[in-house]
Image (cartoon, rainbow, N blue to C red; front, side):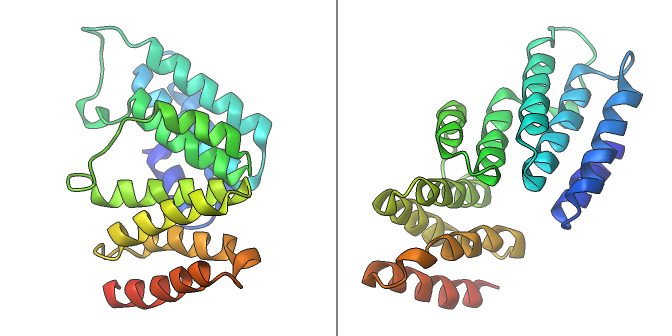
Length: 200
């Protein structure tokens, strides 16, 4: 419950408090909580540290998350409600953590480990992930790749009614500011404003 509260605090814009709660959840669970539960707490902590720019703490938390997932054994206590907490989920979230840290090369490396998710079945997460990739490419000064990923994200998320999902595309449009004089960039920014407004 404390780890879930940490995640909600992070999503509401309170990363420092989220990191404290996630660390507390992990420490209280040591010795009796299932590895997947502890991994969930550590991943929430990693995301919070990523948002605050604490690269050392974020990467340490991601490493511990991976160790915990590796330690899960068949037949051991393993809460079914956290079945989605897998190595693929870790990779997807780690991609975003490194985007937050402005470390695009690490973001690309983690993205290679994330499980492919068909947009027709995983619409929202796929759209978000493409927006994260777009921003990472822009951090790496790769405008063409950034635009390709951003256009894919916009196409997917323009059919999704989610303020949180749309916020990822707003991050992309902000990252495109240095190139706003390009016609393709101006077009994407315009379509993002109109299409997302229509989907809100």
